[in-house]
Length: 85
Image: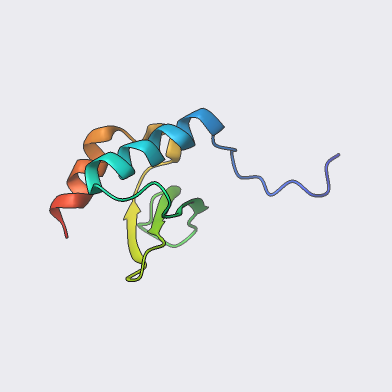
């Protein structure tokens, strides 16, 4: 029995890096800028079971949500975020 398990599925490190690379490319940001990806569970009615919160840690702290797990994010999802700016 693992008492420290959060019950959240872990994202594959290679997929995390792939999503970050798409963000750097699509948003044309410097690779020195930190990008944070957090996969969160939602228990509120009507909320997807997992969503990914993306924060681009530049001066403006741009924040985005994708209603998918990190594993399910595709480059097209990142392109759609850019169009919402």
